[in-house]
Length: 143
Image 1: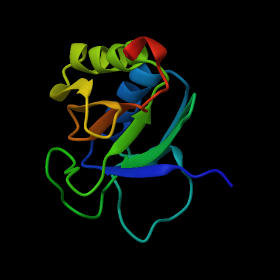
Image 2: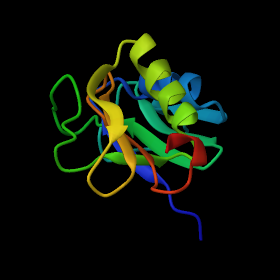
Image 3: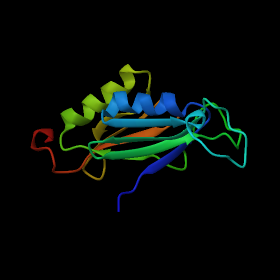
Image 4: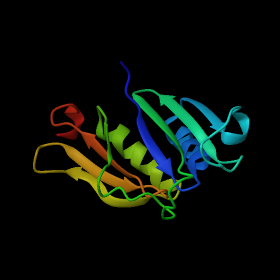
């Protein structure tokens, strides 16, 4: 088994998954409704993202445009977030820097926390919260 996280975007699915490919690298596949043959029980816009997948080192995302339910401009990630574990503080800082350089909001700088890890958070321009973690003891240089 291989699990994917699936995100339903408010018309920004292709843009968001392309952005995540910039952040994480990996292989991206995008399919619009216009590229699919067959009938749907609804009338989707031809340019809407029917399905997309991004497979990067340690990350599998899938998503599409929610054409049936009107949603806000951005996703609300109060009910979910992604936790990215890194082996070193330097790797975690580099990821946070990549997000913030591309317009994400640093909501919690990477710092030591009560449970012994180094932890930080960033919310990207699509409203998705990414928590960045370096488990306690995994980076000898972190002290």
